[in-house]
Length: 446
Image (cartoon, rainbow, N blue to C red; front, side, top):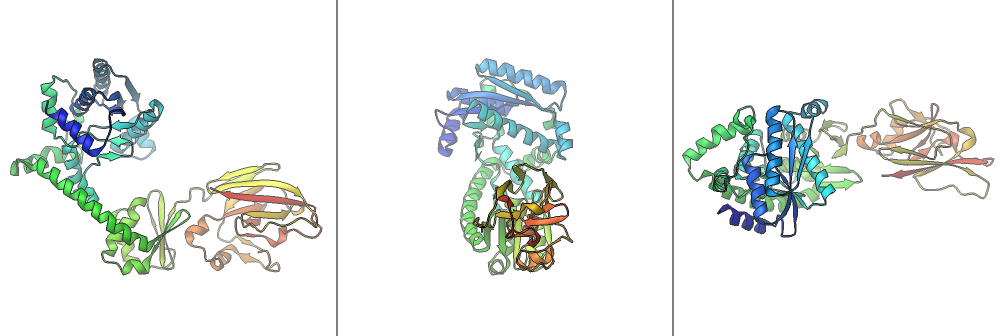
């Protein structure tokens, strides 16, 4: 029963939960999750068991589900289960089976937590899992953060068994006559983690019989080093990164004056999904011409003068939103457009708000459309004496970056641009002394 007091001490020290906590225990039916659920029951913490049937192993998966259900009855705690079409989800989203299963289960755990109004989701990751993760990160390439293994907590997810190794957990199961299921996929070498588990770690344990406990101390030292590293890193990032609305501008000149500049650049880009090799390539192209672009899954990195700008990918680049007559509102990814027709006379005042356009309604016919700009677009800027100007030239004068240009939205009447939203209306649609009706368009950014 040595594991129980260590379990309590570890979780008190790490403040993972308290006496009043309500915890969802992710239970696959394997030894680790069965022991975790049993330990929680000994502490009188309110728990439910949550089981995912990924429908990947036929009858074996169904038997796992039945087993966990019976174990929940034995513990006298509620049981929740969900069935996933994992292969279909993986194919539709171009994910590996492992990635798909991970995404599906954690999304469901969080949904269940909110429905039940519980505090935490507990997973049964233990010391060996954390050590394996360190070596996976080393093999793939990592910074100090990757040497800290699996985090003890991440938002609402807690990992209360990270102090214990596999042998200690299996011994506890034997001492308490706990039965469990063995996932046949864990016995193969199909995955990198299994290769490390079956071949590398036994060799290291042979070299050093206390290897696992040594690694536990190493991970603690790495965590402390990471804390110190983050303090200094944040000081340096504040010198080179500015946030402008939803964009992040990385200044090249001050970056080059910092020691370990390439590492700092990687850390600046990492939160946006750029990997080590991409960061290295960006560093080699720091002084590239404006317009040079690198892509991550959800972000793009664009060179603009003396800056590299991180911006979200524009998902509506080629979309067109049609606005019918009497339609009061149109929604885009960047905000809402509101439309109204107003009576007008000589005493009325034109708004000076850049996000409001007031146009002579007589010259406008519906439907209107909202779209992004394209090469070759032109308009007649208000105040330019009906001089035609290409939008590309107008944007240069406005000193817009590439990412800012991509977010420009146009309000069009047939083939005419009547308003570059938030910037300039077209001279041909301005209010005149004889104007009787005005189309007022208000742009409310999200």
